[in-house]
Structures are given as structure tokens and as C-alpha cells.
Image (cartoon, rainbow, N blue to C red; front, side, top):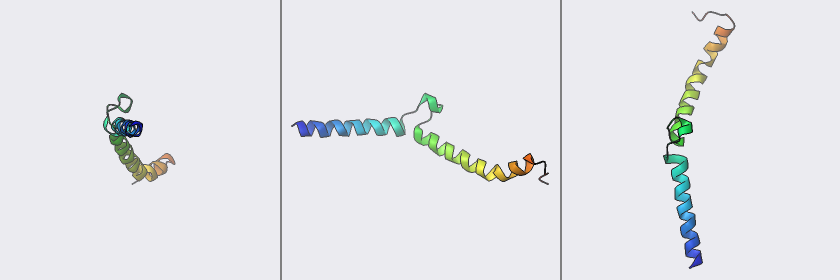
Length: 65
């Protein structure tokens, strides 16, 4: 019986961990879930990476056009 309770506890903890880390909005992440925040951060990174060469050229005083 103790083995069954241990397994039940582990399953419940794992369910809570998944909910907390993936589904539950966090105020520290501006109300987003960690998954939404990670997706948004990756999209921001991709946009910023695409703009990086223009910024480097502009920062050296070279006009873009």
C-alpha cells in the first residue's frame, strides 16, 4: 500500500509541476505562462537577430540607403 501512495504522490507532484511551469500565468512574466513567455522571447530574439546587421552599420555612421 505504501508503494501505491508513493506513486500517487509522485504523480500528483508531477501534475502540479507541469501546471506551475507550463500552464499557470506568472506575474513576474507579465501575466504570461512560462511557455508563452519562452515563445515570445524566442520570437523577440529572432526579430532582433534579423535587425542586428542594420544596427551595426548604423552605429558606425554608415547610412543604410
